[in-house]
Length: 386
Image 1: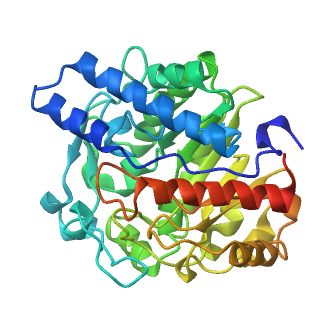
Image 2 (image 1 turned 90 degrees about the vertical axis):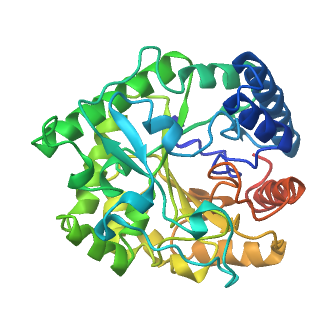
């Protein structure tokens, strides 16, 4: 098994953590010009130090900064591209809208997602990466304080296409979508190269759209903006492969798939079967962090496509509810998954991040840490201390 697959890492987590009140207050204060950028940066660094230390205390061998430098899992990365602008869902046509569903407990979640879908990134000119990079400085700080493997997460390049379709991409700048995908790939490859130069050896791409394409309603949405849902997974697989193709031999690339996550809400349903072959055998990543916390994600049967040398990280603990899982129940589900993929090719995590942005959390910060502690504990008991 290659070094890229991080074979010894059995306890993982998607990356985002609930922002503490002091950080949220500082972000709001900076927006209102009551807190200086330097003061906000100092508070962010303090809170990142705290969560990195907590991850180490729990025994995680992979650490994130909680995405504390962002207010959104996707927007803060994408709007730093030249000529990308965030547009709220309410101003889009029905063909580009997302249905927002109640959480898995059957209760409507709160916050922005309860009233509108996720924001769309509109491309209004030629794409380019900003000088100095996008998350490179953020990663450098994380690496400077981490004692385990620091992980950097970023939204998938497919987000700039699937959320708005052809209509969200300037036709004057990109009359040919092949040129758009080529420029998009270059921005990502340059950013990954910058991260690699800074010492990053674990990059995670948050690829929700392949999971969305398991939902018949989302497949119909793809048809409405002129795409074939049968071939779109191949398009996105090639896009991801092109993005990560130039990474160092010792850099692990992972993708995380889920069906939407804000305030306990979700956007899509359906098992991985429609995309499983492409997902596991065409997408050239090393690890897959997969949502499996509810029946909406389907059975473990698609894991039969997992080839040797790759790791499937089972997202069995939910971040959509503060209800605590039972250890024996999680172990039974791992045993069930091992009927379709070897236990040595499996690992464990929550199904998604704990905070896709600011607000909308479904649990306390302490319950978040209790869930992560359970992930680490189960991983040690199932796979050994490694």
